[in-house]
Length: 126
Ligand SMILES: [Zn+2]
Ligand SMILES: [Zn+2]
Image 1 (cartoon, protein in one colour):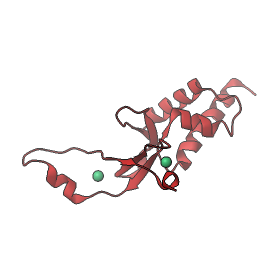
Image 2 (cartoon, protein in one colour):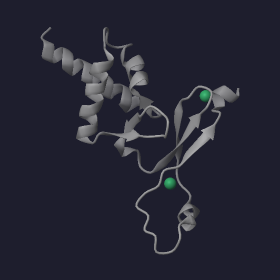
Image 3 (spheres, helix red, strand yellow):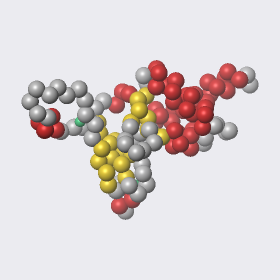
């Protein structure tokens, strides 16, 4: 197999993992999932593939303070996140609340907001 097609296969495996993901994944989680399809996949390769997808605008970074950056598809629309303090996974929370904008003082212009819930996920709650 020529080196280029191997590279393409690795990138495809990384995009497939992020395509199927129902929650934001860290590079470590992408590596773990993609390794099931491709042998000998390295973390540097996953970083390169993730950066290429970021540049394409196909994925975006989910940054939670004090946490490894996670990535999700850009086409998900506005939503929020929930981090489980037991398994440390981050989940998507669909939708938003209108009243959140009412917290902002008059004449302040809001461009965006991010909300992270912290607690225990259903699996960890048992
Ligand atoms: Zn959990
Ligand atoms: Zn919102």
